[in-house]
Structures are given as structure tokens and as C-alpha cells.
Image 1 (cartoon, rainbow, N blue to C red):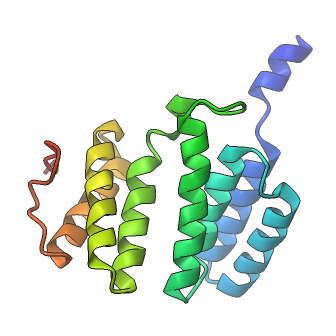
Image 2: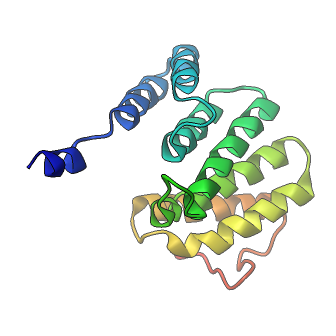
Length: 167
């Protein structure tokens, strides 16, 4: 019975990350960044890859400097790749839905930095990974953002690698 309870217990770190996300969405960007950085120091570079991916993904959004945002988005992708590769502590299935958004964020970061080819490369990867998205609000939002960035980058909206946006 104890083992079953442990399996269903909420992840305290993800809960704490979620609380800081709510603080950020409430408009306190500086405090959110400070708390995210405290959590990052606690988790560490070698912490649970799901925690690092989630935290870095949200921490990127608290930065004004596109280079800082890029650095955190790259950390998020690196942690996600650890999960996808099936490394210890990883679950390849748990990350499939994150990859389109992670690559989309990197494409947007590179676009802000004037690095069009890198932006297009990550846009292609976002499109390719978009097939893993569910037909729900989140999936529709990511697909829509991919389409908007494709238009801004002058890319064909029908996409690479067989991806077609859902309308």
C-alpha cells in the first residue's frame, strides 16, 4: 500500500515550479525569476531531467535578453533529450509533447537574435515533432504558434517533413 501511495503522490518539485509559474503569470516576473533560480540551484545541473526541462523552459520566459532566454531554452532541450534518449531517470514518452514547444521557443529565440537559419532549423524540428501533440487546446496553440512563426520567417505554412497545420 505504501508503494502505491508513493506512485500517486504529486511531484513536489513540479508543484513548486507550478506555483512560481502562477506567480509569473500574475505579473511578478522579477520575483518569479528569483524563485526559479533558487529552484535551479537546488535541483542542480545533474538533477532530474524532467525537473530541469520544466524549470528551464519556464525560466527562459522570465528573461528580457534574448541571449539569456536562448541559454535557458537550450538547457530545457538538453534535459528533454536526456528523457527522450531513455537515459536513467528518463521516460521517452513523457517528453514527446514538450518537443514541439521547446523547438518552437528556440526558433523564436534565434529569430530574435537575427539567426534566421538556426530559427528555420528549429522551426522544422518543431513541425516534425508536432505530430505528437494532442488535439486539444495546448496542441492547437502550439500548432498555431508554429504557423505564425513560419509566416514571420517566410516559410511555407504547409511545412517540412509532411506536417500540415490543423485548422
